[in-house]
Image (tube, rainbow, N blue to C red):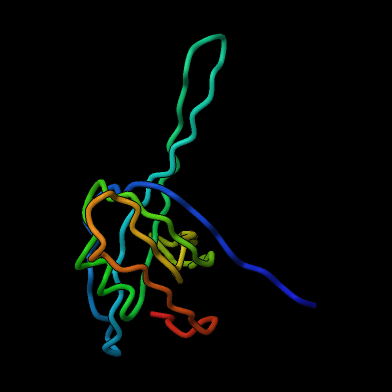
Length: 126
C-alpha cells in the first residue's frame, strides 16, 4: 500500500539554527519554526502560533546554519518523524520535521539559494 509523509510550512525562525555533528560524523542543524494562524472572532483579530521543531541534514543543514537566523522567513517541505525516549522512567515522544527542501522568503538578495535535498527514509537516524 502506498504511503505519504509530507509537510509544507511557511514560518519564521524562533531562534538561530544550531549545527552539530553526530557521533558518526554526519552534519545536522536544528531550529524552531513559528507558524502563526490569524482569524477574526467578534470583530477582534486573534492569533495562535504553533512551534515546530525542525532538523536539516547534510548540505541543507550547512546552508541553514550559514544563511538563516532568528526571524528569517522560510518555506519548508519535509517529512514528520517521531522519536521516543525515556526520562525519569517515563516514556516520552517528540515529533519533528526533517527538512527536505527549503526556500528563503526574506526580501534580501538573489544570492540566497533555494536548496532541495531528497533523502532516503531513515537514512539519518542519529
